[in-house]
Length: 431
Image (cartoon, rainbow, N blue to C red; front, side, top):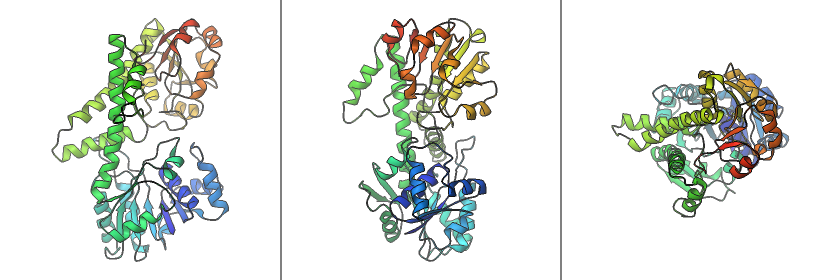
């Protein structure tokens, strides 16, 4: 099929490269001319395993191309994916300005029979909203159909998640259009759910809210484990063997972050407020997440053995999780910011995103390796689970520090091994 992708960001680029890999002819559009020029040369602006290879394969076999302007991509396309950003307002509501602007731009050039697909995470009711906007801009509702096809991509595993998904969800009121969208995924073996647009949109929000609930729940359990001298890793293991629960997202830490969970939980709370429903459970999830940030700051203070205003803190890891360069809503940055506000000297290291973090956070002292960051520190705060932190020379780390203490907010290290090396060790919910 001839496919247009509007928005060459994280979701759009992954979607376009994977659809080209599946044999479709894909044109990705973006408003940033420099970004389009770089992508046309195979230069990938985001860190995502396997994505660069797919983009370059698509460019080589001429199934993937990049252009400036939504209309240039949408003209003549059979399927048009909207993958533009939907930033969150202060009240948690998604800002649909970019979606609306693109819908108005492409409406006049759409051929009869085109299916426009919302791939961006959008509020419930957005499919009908886009249909109305395009109708006002000149697209006939008799000839152009709007569908929902939410993405479920985990950063760091997006290519795998697209090509080996747990499920494919299509929301559309026109069965024929739904079939055409489903044909894009021919060759992918996964359950296919075709439903109404509102239910498809809700599935995305409900899924992320539930996963955020698991994160906050296991963090609360970890905090209780500390109070009763239990080990949360043993508790999570015992829970995870229950097939109704499973092991995924039962890893305690500094709180959830990234581009999805904070935004989607806030959006779902906004939706529930508008609908007149008091979503107490989800309010609790968000509150526990905020409290977890402060709890990590307090752990750092205690482990340092001094007031934060006099402490030197080494922060290892700044992205919201490992294997990505994404700093959006990173709990590591929230904690680093709290430490700076308390007067601490913060020396940081991240394998990929250190320079970006320094730009975002004035006062953050970013170093080239974890040993430099730890030099003279009173405590190391391990805030992102980069695998390289497992294999460091911890004797060298201890010798470089003023006071050998580690707050392992990701439970990445072995407590006994760290204590044998002379560290004061504090994990999350561990003895």
